[in-house]
Image 1 (cartoon, rainbow, N blue to C red):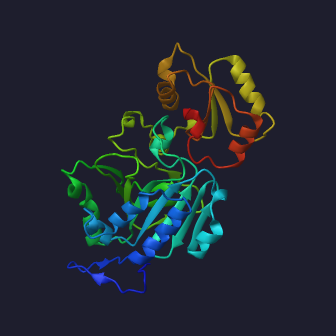
Image 2 (image 1 turned 180 degrees about the vertical axis):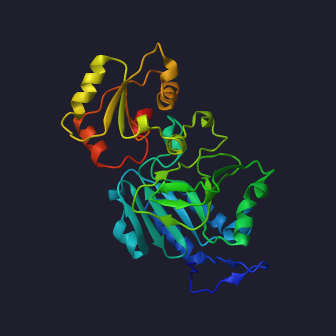
Image 3 (image 1 turned 90 degrees about the vertical axis):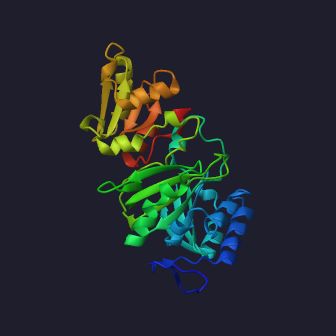
Length: 342
């Protein structure tokens, strides 16, 4: 359902497309509150107002949107002023661990997360902003009519020659997953300059499909101009495209019989656990799984022992503890553990 704010009726473009009308006064009020609560930085509200302004370079695409969202990275959801946020809008979704979404008055949706959602989160030294900070802004192009489709497809050509970068995700038969949701396709736009406060913009095309089951997570791409972009590790892309049987469940990669015994002992008290160990040898580097090779290159040292859950690296250079083993067998693993990149 299209949301029109401020009690205003939609206006029509020359193409007959209903255009989202933002109530700027309400948007500014929400931004002022979020800034005052130190949930947004001083300059991040400026980008929101730029996105909904008529002079924005991609205004035709924004005009085809049903809503706009702001995705904020935080340390802990428990620290958020939930009662105040609920009073300013509506709690739409709260999924543990680490995700909550509020639909605020004014046409702005606010999302808070504490787990890795971007390729930047998976690269040591790529994230330099202190939390909370905006990971990205999202333009929700939900209608699947011809006009919206054409405006979505035109995004790369509309920014061509400006020094901006774009990255495409999804396509026919290949939806883009975000934990419990999916959409058909996305364009990610990175504006010229690359300064930290000018955050990426997501243009998502297609109906938002919500599932109670965890679907996977296509991480927000890193800016191609980022100096560490060549070390981006597309874990989810490789995991979902062809997760072999020997990568499903819990696998502990080891380099010695002692490490193998230690790992098996940790999981011995958890009957029915789909855990396997696999011994790797430097004499046969061609047998190393991609996840081991990628971490070796990133850490510049051998990552073994390495625990991987459904393709996600979660513990490196040691066997997991009993507490970790219980967690891996009882809770879904949504992404690589952040500390494996330290």
